[in-house]
Image (cartoon, rainbow, N blue to C red; front, side):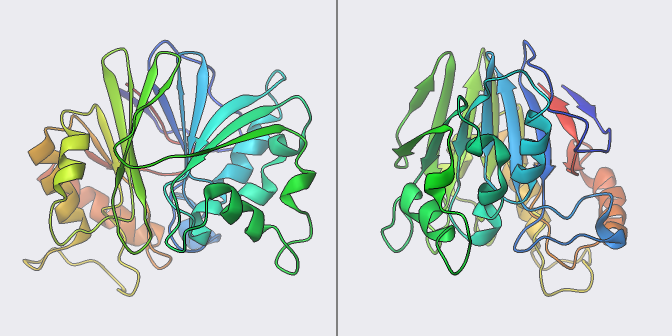
Amino acid sequence: MSVSAYRSGKEGAPQYQSELSIKFWGVRGSVPTPGADTAFYGGNTCCIEILADQQRFIFDGGTGLRVLGEALGQTPKPVKGHLFFTHTQWDRIQGFPFFLPAFESGNEFHIYGGTAANGASIKQCLTTQMLKPGFSVPLQAMQAALKFHDITPGSTIRIGNITIAPIGLYGHTNALGYRLSYQGKSVVYATDTEYAHIDENLLFLAHQADLLIYDGMYVDMCDQIHLQPSPQPWQAAIQLAQTAQVKQLAMVHYGPRQNDTLLNGLAHQLKDIEPQVLLAHEGMVIQC
């Protein structure tokens, strides 16, 4: 497994690789936080891209999706992909109305999501977000072929040689976690989790994964993180990764007040505790 830490998310989308190639286009939670204090880790909300089997898989459509869309504008046409949403709170869907490839005829995207807490489908949630007065351009203006798929926890999705397994995570948001498997390699993406205890379903999903992308960092109302006996999200993340025998753990979903200085300090301390832990930043590429 290799990690590339080149900085800019604007350098273009990674080209297809024989292995799994994972790029982080957004790693923030709740609300975008641009500025000098977050320039390294990035201020865009969650969006992860995985390339495998000559296909593109996108997880969550936060504002990082807009930057990914700009990069895809530099790639050969048509653009195709599969977009999976964990849930439909704003920080996971707010980049979708600005995803330029969805407005271009000839492109094609399959869009997957579970049922929201209010019973709405993924198509209904994305459509509602783009209605007036909240937004000026309706979803119907998107000229790409958009194919919506309602999915449920425990199902198995097969796309070519790729297998994707969703599980239910956090009850208040009906969030889903995903495991993508390809040629003996696997990546698990799980955010909006309960860190007070280990979820047995998530433990099963993450078992011996090559990479676990997890929200072990969200501490919204704290000015700083203290390494202390009381449980912290990052401690739960490490415990989960160790118990599940995960090869590498990447943390995402930083709170709005977790700036570069705070995260850098924690990253140095975590290296002494668990060397296989990294804090993801925008533009980071991991190949499994």
